[in-house]
Image 1: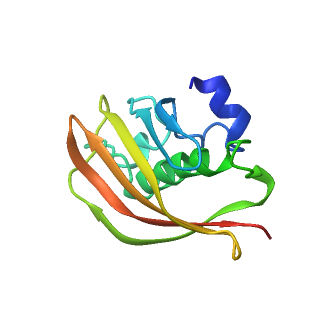
Image 2: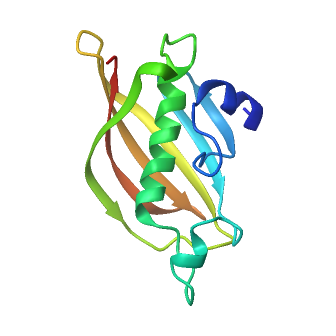
Length: 143
């Protein structure tokens, strides 16, 4: 899935769209996507001037956007007008992500409560095959 297909599904736009390409996609089940981290990303001048590190909260946001791609695909029935990131648990940052890295994010649906409009997902992000961030994500549909 290229950037144009991603833009059709996610409501996010520059500078907050943090997914560049989807490399594995199983709508309603899982997705693997990448974010190319470059020195041109707008957060690096302030985080930090002497040592450019991708902010952890933006890694979590990028992973949540991949989760959105899993659940918002038209075949799954999600609507970007009423889909929200609702919570995170057990998040751990294992290694810093720096300019030049390719962040590979895998989001997998672990529980779907259609009645309540809640999706629980397991997320892991990797750089060079090593886990740099992981956690459990909660998504809410409706409202």
